[in-house]
Length: 111
Image 1 (cartoon, helix red, strand yellow):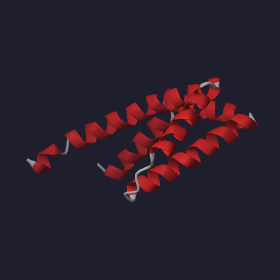
Image 2 (image 1 turned 120 degrees about the horizontal axis):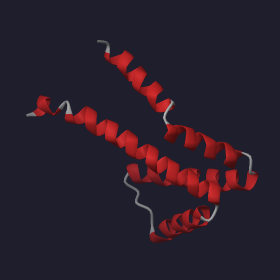
Image 3 (image 1 turned 135 degrees about the vertical axis):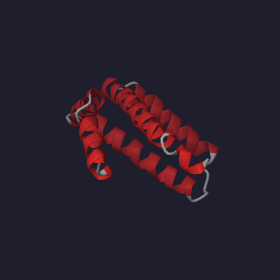
Image 4 (image 1 turned 90 degrees about the horizontal axis):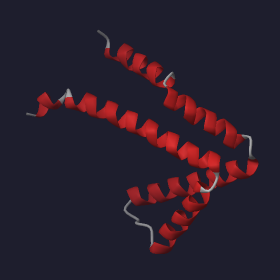
C-alpha cells in the first residue's frame, strides 16, 4: 500500500464531494458579480494580512478587529457570500474530521 496513492484517492474523493461542489458553485456566482467579488477579495486580503501579522506576534488592535467584524457583517448580508461562508464551514469540518482520523491512528507512536 502506497500512502501517497491513498492521499491522491482521498484528494479525488474530496474534490468530488458535494461540499466542494457547493463552494465552487458559490465562487462562480460571486465571480459573476463584480461588486461581490471585490468585497470578498478585499475581505480575504485583509484577513490574510491580519493572520500573517498575528503569526509574527503582532496582535491586531481593537480598531482593526472591529473593522474586520464590520466587513464580515456586511458580507453576511450578501446571499451568495453568506452561502459561500456556510459551504466553506461545512468543508472545513470534513477536513478537520479527516485530520482527526489520521492523527488518532498515529497516537500509538507517542504513547
